[in-house]
Amino acid sequence: MTGQNSIWKRLDENAERWMLLGFYGMIVATIVVEVVRRFILSYSSIWGEEIARYAFIYLAWVGASAAVKDRAHIRIDVIMHYLSRRAKAIVYLLGDFCMLAMAVLALYTALESISISIKFGSVTHGLRISLAWFLAAVPLGFSLMLFRLLQSIWRDLNDLRYGRDVYEGAKMFDE
Image 1 (cartoon, rainbow, N blue to C red):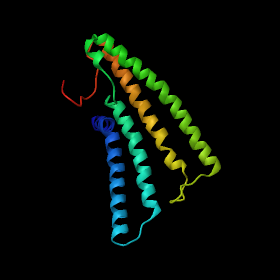
Image 2: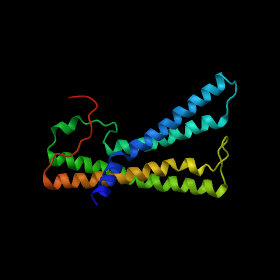
Image 3: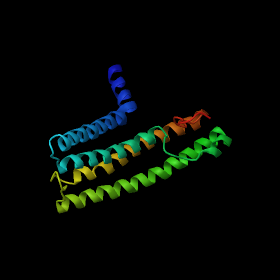
Image 4: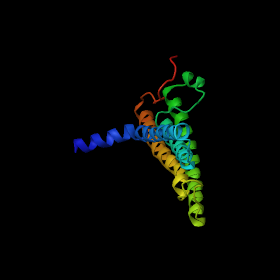
């Protein structure tokens, strides 16, 4: 059981990072191949640009989930320095609940968009495959965000309950 817990813990800590690495690697590899093809072989393809573009879209949505997990989204937190532990936890919980409501609405809208794409048989211009595969980046990102928001809410409720400092995320600059 310990080995299984270790796998889940590593997956919880690094899932978005691994996905980001994969999508970033796909972008770099595709662009390198296309540059070589264009400048050395005097030939380029439409699919290379499409793969890079759609990989970047996935990268952005998975990155948004990673930012939710680490509380790394841009925010103005000057007032947070003057609040008590309890008030900080309440402010963070309020923000998480607002974001949760927005993520549920966005997930529903994104799934509706995929449904319409499938219904009408939309395909990409270069690859000629179902556009639904690429539209799936949005619900994937919001599903991951929902999962991370629920984790954050659980963590903040426990911090509030036990009087601990609320998790404020990684700092970009020292204070």
